[in-house]
Each structure stands twice: as structure tokens, then as C-alpha cells.
Image 1 (tube, rainbow, N blue to C red):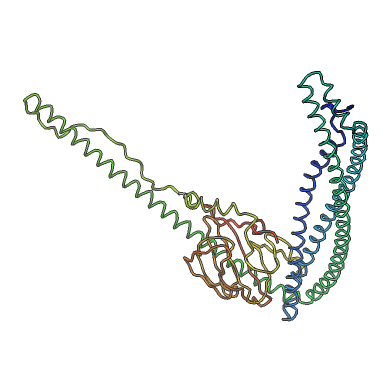
Image 2 (image 1 turned 120 degrees about the vertical axis):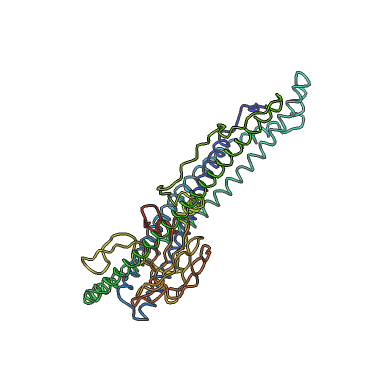
Length: 471
């Protein structure tokens, strides 16, 4: 029974196991990445469809070319991101194809080795095929224990043959599955390449339309400059109002904390006086008890020294920080944990103007300083809160519509340019609650959204796009 000792492990089988286990991890990782890219491609396609529908609506209503240009710019940006996503997906598929082809080669080589080893096993089995030979092999043992080991070895040998045969079948089945997967990946790659070309064609058309809008807007530059000037006035009014509200809130909060600290000081002073009174009473009682024990009458001293408790110094001129209040710290922590995942305040639409200082999209030489983000949406679009909080302000700015401020600890979100408002001061709101509908500003339906933090320094605007979920 040549070649039957336990140290003889199948090299081909070991290679097959290592190849399968290593490739399984890589396959799972690749599939996860591929699923993420596919999901993002689907999201971008949905956004492009929504933006395209908005453009049609604005064209049908003969809205301003400026709003259409913003929507076209957003559409081009989304299509360019979609092309990048497609290229990443194609790259992932190329990697899968390459690994899959390599895996098939490795499996085929392992099968050849398994076949060669299996042939040897069959040959050895053929040589020892008679029951007499097997029995003689067992009976020729030097003792009982060796005979038992030989019986076990023959049994293991038979099981190894079955195992090798099954491994070859499994490897052949996996090769067939890999080949099928490779064909599927190649078809997907072709479809994605076709999608990419379609998107490039659409971008070319969008850019032609973009150029037409820019040429038209040049002829309307005087009117646009006046509109932009009015918008800047309205935004300064909004900023001033927000800062005024914040100053009032800081003053009110600091007054509340001051009163709280004063009340603590008053209670501490009352406790000090009570402790002093009790100490005096205890000292008098102790003197009387000593006099009674000695049979003499002790004179009562009215100036008996007592322990003096130094009262805490009252807080008079301190300026407590409102953001250090425990309930505010907790609210801040919860709010900050959701940075990058807050929902958009509109169901569908596009970013018309980004946060910060940047050149105007259609007026040369004009710089826009946006303290928030402008969302272009459709008529009667409902506005949603982006997080749990309390409505702390509702006010109107002439020409800019209604404004709602929701407070989330030291953070606030501002929803400006509303037609109808469903909430009032003090209303508790949850994430995605409806608070109103967008107004028509004459050029389109635009929500101006701000997000900022209140500190002792005042109102500190944040870039909303860093807080909102990517779309």
C-alpha cells in the first residue's frame, strides 16, 4: 500500500483550498464596492431625471433664464459625476474580470493536479483490488494495534478517493460559474460604456443650451444686476434679523443662568446662617449641660464664639456661556453626530447657489457671498425640517417671504423664502416634518437654507452641504 502514510498531503488540494479562501474575501469586497457604485449610479440617475423635469417646468412657465441656467449647470455637474461613477464601476468590473480569468486558470491547474493524484490512487486501488490482498495487508500486521491502524488507513484511503472526486466536481462547477459570471460582467461593461457615451452626448447638448442661456442673459444684464442687488439687500436683512435674534437669545440665556447662579448663592447664604444658628444653639446647650452636672449655674454668654462658615462669593459680573448648559451640550452632541447625513429640506430640486463667496453664474464681475445654500424647486413644493428641534422664530421679510428658525441646542437651521408656514414659535418638530411651502420669488421657486451655530461670539454660519446627505 504505497503512499498511504498520513504525512502525504495532497499539494493540489491545499492549493485549491487556499485559492478558494483567498479569492472569496476579494470577491465579497469587490461585490460590496460594486453594489455601492450601482446604488450611487441609481441615485444620480434619479437626480438627473428630477432636474430635467424641473427644467421643463421652468421653460413651460417661461421662468427666468437665470434659474434655468442654474438647473442646467446642476444637470451637467450630475452627469459628469455619473460618468465618474460609471468609470469607477467599469474599473471594478475590469478587476473582477481579470481576477475571474486568473481564478479559472488556477482552478484548471488544480484540477489537473487532482486528476493526476486521483489516477495514482485508482491505480493503487486496482493493484490492491482483491479482498484477499486487503485482508492479507491487515493480517500481516505485527500486532493487534497495527492491524487496527491498517483498517483505519484503508478506510481513510477510500474516503480520500471520494473526497478528491468531489473536489474535482466542485472545482469544475466553480469554473462554469466563473465563466458565466465573466460573461455577465462583460455584458454589463458594454452596457455601462454605452451609458457613458449617452451621458457625454447629453452633456454636449446641455452645454449648447447653456451657451444659449448665457448669450440671452448678457442682453438682460442690466435687469439681472438690479435683481441681484435686491437679493443682496434681502439677504442682509435676513442676516441682520438672525444676528438680532441670536443676540437676544444669548442675552436671555445669560440672564437665566445669572439668576440661576444668584439663586444658588442665596440658598447657600441661607444655609450658612442656619448652620451658624445651630452651632450657637449647640454651644449654649453644651454649656448648660456642663453647669448642671457640676451643680453650679453657668452664666450664659451672649458672645460665645462659633464656627464661622465663609459664604461663597456671589456671581455678579461673570458672563456664563450658553453653550455650556448640560441640555445644550447634549443636543449639540446628537446634532453633530448626524453631520453629513441630514436630509434635504426639499423633496426634489437642485442647488442654485452654493455656500460662501463665489462668482455669479451669469453676471460678470459680480461676487456672491451666500451664508447658506439656495435650492431651486418646483411650485408649491413643501419644506421639511432637517432635524428634531423647536421653532424659535417665525418672521416676514418684505419681498423675501416668510422665514422659520428651528433651534437644535446651540445649532440653528433657517428656512427662508416660504409662502405658507405650518408652524409657530414653540412648536416641537421632528426630522422631515413639514413646516411650509416655498414662495415664488419672481424668478422661480427658491428656498434659501442656512445652518449655523450660536456661540458667545454670535452667529457662525456653517456650510450646509457638509451637513446634508449627498444626493
